[in-house]
Image 1: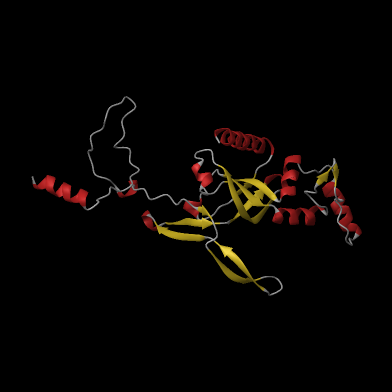
Image 2 (image 1 turned 45 degrees about the horizontal axis):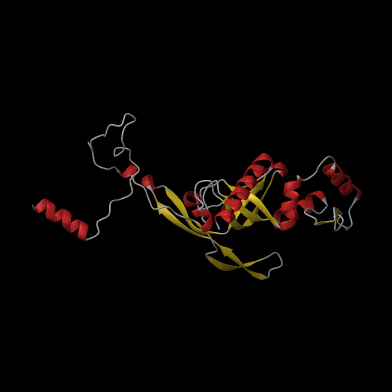
Length: 246
């Protein structure tokens, strides 16, 4: 009687079970149940998901190259003490990350603009949740600036009636050695058409490869080639499905 009374009191007080990552409560492949032969262990615990949001936490004043103060937004990252004294970095809000452009072998810190696709759950797209393998749109400005400096010509020029609105070349004084270097770099080099079209819009599709809820960072790489085509088809398919439902 007292046992049932205590159990009832626990229910009334709102007693909640912890999140566990054990497999003792699961059935075997054959369908048989395993009787609980030991209690839970510390190394089997689980924690609440981070659900890192695409947002700026707060802004702080930093000095630029000229010594002028400018506001820079930073994310919200919490430290979690784990088993063995190890630390995890739980990002709650992020809006920047390091993204690499693989074919050009360059990495730049850039702003994350939007969450576009998630293979596991559309709800994570609606709520703008940053997780590993999510397809995001990033600001193309840092990569555009690097391209103009490295190749000496513009990228992502608007096309009107089948012709480019402005010239690719940048008018500036250059030494003969630099001209030769740029000529060698531009020899047999061209930006892929899908990437060039994205530069016109000022945004690039990228894939998140880090785990924001574990390492506190949102890093990844720019989508290119067949992988880019694959995700564009997926996003278009999802868009047509939504419009058909409406």
